Length: 225
Length: 290
Image (cartoon, rainbow over all chains, first blue to last red; front, side, top):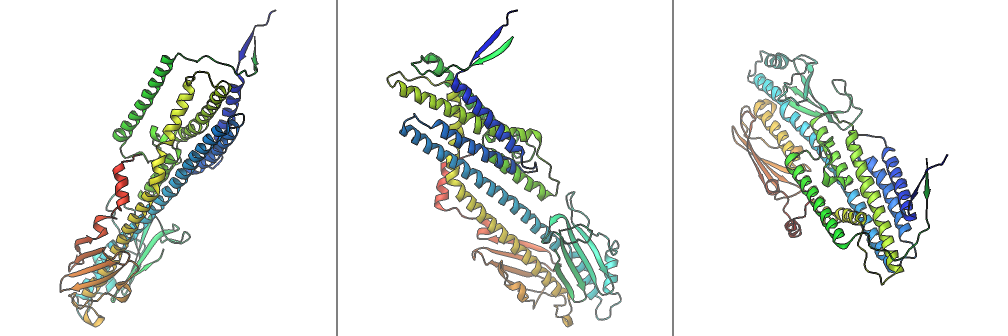
């Protein structure tokens, strides 16, 4: 039986180019998926970018070899080096800048959260202090009784903050409620504080927390985390 | 039936052009028009269809970012920051976006340079072998790869020059806003202290219903952010703040008898932002855009 054969002629340089392409693509794909896949692109593209950069350098060394003229090799080599430098600089700057912007955003959120606590939480305490001292020298009600009368929902452990909007995650807990002292603890649900191991009032860890203590002499404030 | 692949020896000799001149020129023109049309479509899409969402995660990568994977990554990072700002949960990157980014890396940084450099070398070698031969028209693959490289390289040049000053400007503005925000927090602390003074009886060192006599406590008078002073009347107090980072930046605010703020006034850089230097103004007039 005759065997039919199909002969595919491939020029040598095309075959070599295809070989380079296959190697380059495989290396970049593998490098891209080596880092753990997270919520950021940077680990993957940095790994793949380093491999791609090494590939391009190797490609330059191969394609700029003799018998090309020295002038052509130098010109293309210098231009390519400049382009690689341009890409590397833009790449690294963009990474630095984007992480900086993200950090600034989170710092701003923390400051906003603390500022809101500073603005919102003392309100009920000032009201109680004002009513208490308006009684004059003879006090009929203790400070704690005044606070509880003005804030009927206030019990030890209760959250007395009413959200102003759906994403308002601030909580204000009553830590202490005695005749002479009221302690309110303000806590954010997702704004990180200074110490990631700090145990928050509601059992979470590491969230921003501020405490406000009311006595008959006034309000003191402590930034707990 | 079986397949055999033969590798004939490379022979460099005078070669006829691959295409007739008018065909190659028209194909080049068509390629250029197609690329320009794609670019215009991408611009239209990004500005009018997805105006504010280019940097949110899960967004399909737009064409102009396809060749700059670091811009895609930067957008993802900033988008993650915005999500964390709102308190929502971060989600892993979608498979589609991962594959698009990988495709951009493979096409723009492996396939295009490989084709370009191999073809460039082949053309140089042919010219060296026969310098008297007429100039050969470039192949479509060489033209396309050259255009892609130019489209990648040229926009990066102005960014390389302007990016450091833009980043410095961003940091300066951020520092100004930071200073302003810290000063406002300090003012809130002073407002507390003044309101408390007004409530407390004279026996406890208070104003017993008046702000008169209130003095800013030492620890609040001069902080790392600003210096503070007050002007106190019976039912109103005015707080003056002068930034320690920039003496032309000041804040005035009135506090009423119930502790309510009114008439916030921000002066200096707090109201105008960081002024541009003449160099920065010149760069803005060049209208480089990404």
